[in-house]
Length: 187
Ligand SMILES: CC(C)(COP(=O)(O)OP(=O)(O)OC[C@H]1O[C@@H](n2cnc3c(N)ncnc32)[C@H](O)[C@@H]1OP(=O)(O)O)[C@@H](O)C(=O)NCCC(=O)NCCS
Image (cartoon, rainbow, N blue to C red; front, side):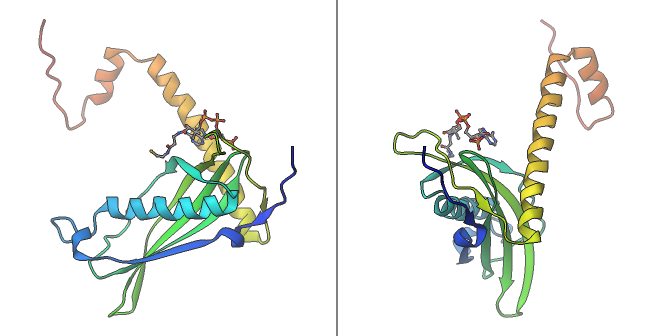
């Protein structure tokens, strides 16, 4: 097996900038969330593939919160950087900013983390180069990615457990007081 040399995050940092045109808007006049998700996927793909030296696929997206609406006419920039690498997986951090060019105002609309997996010629996951950590910021991002992985793993375990412990009586107690009506037809 060949030993891969580490690559810095700088090597694969990628930015996509796109003008938000009227056809991207929803009926409320704001930009569709799906347009931004698609751009995020594109920039994550470009950044991950550049680091991996292979094409990558998206395997998981770690929370996308739209903190502020994006308007038609805004210039949206998506900045992607490899935060963490495993064996075949990479976590790409993406920061989205929207700029109103007339007012010169810039707003941070969201930050998300895309987990991508590098694939070889036969479509199998393949090893990616290690990440060279060159600053405190690089180390912080790497460690935060490990923390998020651990939190996700532990919440998946909790979810699994609560599925196993499921009972109608427990569920009814939980929905009591929520904004729903229980109306199960009698057989
Ligand atoms: C991604 C994929 C190759 C993983 O396949 P797999 O059989 O689970 O492969 P492995 O178990 O070897 O896992 C590969 C890596 O993915 C990671 N992984 C798998 N599922 C994951 C998940 N839900 N979240 C985060 N990482 C995940 C594993 O931890 C592993 O990382 P590592 O190599 O750095 O240790 C496979 O699920 C796939 O091809 N999915 C479709 C992806 C796709 O087409 N995306 C486009 C959207 S339609």
